[in-house]
Length: 231
Image (cartoon, rainbow, N blue to C red; front, side):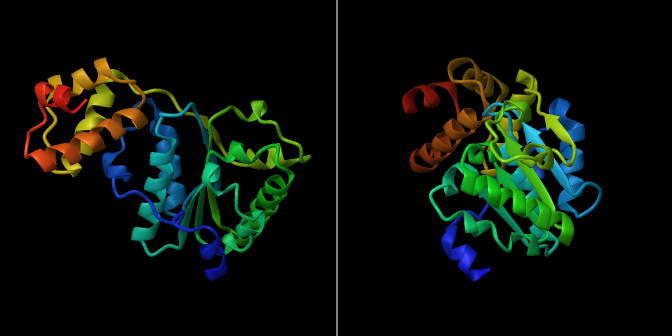
């Protein structure tokens, strides 16, 4: 595993904020529940989640890695878009782990090297009993797959389209994220963020991270005037 780790720097690390404790499932309770079972090495051995950016796919995958690692399982989290410039042979041997999470797996489609490497990894995971959780930004039928049978293998397990959170659920998610950082995010301030910034959770969390740093530096509470001064 040392050679693989050297080829894929940092991709085995997950963000501390992306745990099940800060995850708001909304209408995705079934998908999140099955993913959580998989992270505990129970139930399904392969799952695919797909949705547009900002729907929480990365959060779910990283939460699964954190949960599995907390039970002394061997795990890895691979953001496909960030590893395409390394050798596709980097996927070799990953089936020895308990849990492999590959984010934005559809980014590998159309590249013969990565399609073959992924095809072989899925087969080896099934043989070894390793758990595989995948995410994509497009529905499987929209992927530009070249390798015969790869599309069907990527759908060997349940496939879920994630649904967007309501505004109320987004506010809860923001407040959980803020609370984890020791911040208090009042309802009216969270609503201001929803109203004045892009509404996908990825962007909202980025804005909250910036506010966290500014709040710490300036020793200010999260208020609407403070947000206006920062942005």
